[in-house]
Image (cartoon, rainbow, N blue to C red; front, top):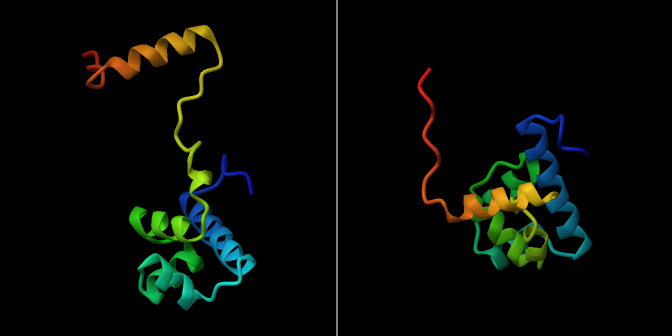
Length: 103
């Protein structure tokens, strides 16, 4: 599934299904994975069913499944040109967001 044109609900459902597939591929029951991740069985079931969970729950499941490397590229600023590299460098030094101009 390409997330570009997906709704938040569709993305959540897809991520939950992908985590379920990973769990099954590794041969864990829901109960085993929930215990490994330090979660309730209900929390894991909800995550796998519709993707609904806290960020902490997601991270715990990802860690328990050994998929933490999959998170490495999330939200990393991509630099494709020298101008973008310079802009990213300036942004990384900035402490606050820029003020909006009054109209």
